[in-house]
Image 1: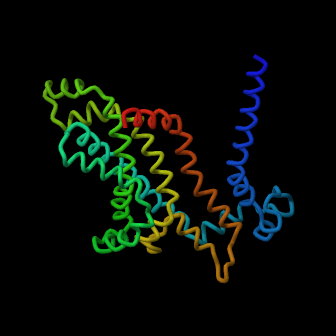
Image 2: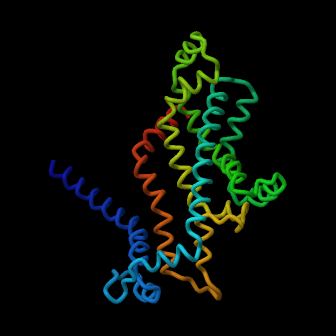
Image 3: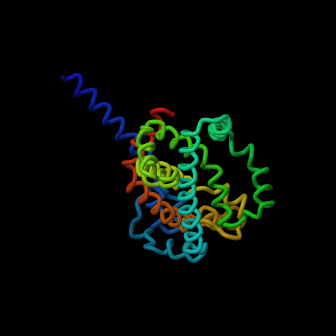
Length: 277
C-alpha cells in the first residue's frame, strides 16, 4: 500500500510538472499582454509591476491596428460554417458508405483514409490553382476547401461509430415508413452526437488557428485573425510585441471557451469512433 501511494505521488508530481510546462507559454503571453512593449523584450518572464503595467493599452492598440472585429467576424464565419458542413456532409457520407457495400463505396472509403496521410505541402500548390479556377478564393469558397480537407478524419470517425449501431434499428424505422433521409436524421444522427461534438472540437480548433490555408486561398483581401495578427510586424523585422500578445490572448479566448465547454465529449467520441474503425 505504501509503495502504491509513493507511486501515485510520483505520477501526480510528474503530471503537475507537465501541466506547468504546457501552460507556461499561455501564461507568458497573458502576462506580457499587460506590459509596455519596451519591457517585454528586457524581462519577458517578469510579472507586470507599477513601472511596466500598461493596463489595456496593448489591447486598444492591437484592435485598432489590425481591424480585430472584422478579422474576428471572418474567422467566426469560416469556422462555424466549415464545421457545420463537415459534420453534416461527412456523417451522411459515412452512413452511406458503411451501409451500402459496393466497390465504389469501398473505393471512396479508402480514398478518404488515404487523404489523411497525404502531407498538405504536397498538394498546396495544385490546390491553390484549383481554388482560383473554381473561384473559391472567397470566405464562402474557403468553407468548401475546409470541407475537403476535413472530410477524411471526420468520415473515418463517423464510419467507425456507425458500424457499432445495430442495423435492426434502421430496418425497424424503414418498416414504419421512414425514408432513408428521415431514417438518418431521426434515428442515426441523434446517436452520432458524441462523435459529432468530437469532430466539431477538433476541426474548430484547427480551422480557427489555421494560417496557411486562408493565406493561400483568400490572401489578404479578407483577413482572418491569424493573418491579421501578422500585420503587427513592421518594417525591418520590427514587431509590436505588446499588441501582438494582446491579440493572441483575444484570439485564444473563443476556442478555449469552446474546448472547455465540450472537452468531456472528446474521449467518448474518439473511443466510439475507433471501436470498429
